[in-house]
Length: 142
Image (tube, rainbow, N blue to C red; front, side, top):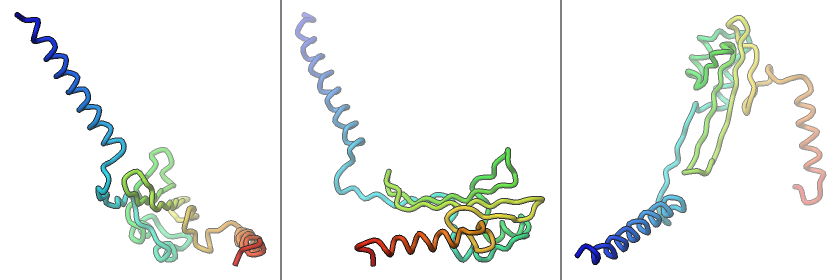
């Protein structure tokens, strides 16, 4: 009498499929009330570190102040990247990036979110001030 075992097998298979689908759905949506920690990745770079850098510093001096770069490009050894991201699960809370450039092992430029006065292109200060005045002259701006 093997015939009665088949309905049980089908119902067991159906229950397994439903349970698997429910668990997969919980992972996609997320459990309510579950605490997610903030994850920091990359190099923490702040204004004080950037202000210590001066044009003409050696790679060794820059590494002492900034730490080892997260990204050293094999094809462009004169560029170091210092990215930094804080995220909570899939949500990015904060991110910053600083790129340091060298010529003949001497610091020549800094690009990114923190840039010292000596590394800014000419006219950039005037442009930022003009943008600030435009924003202040708009109605509702304080």
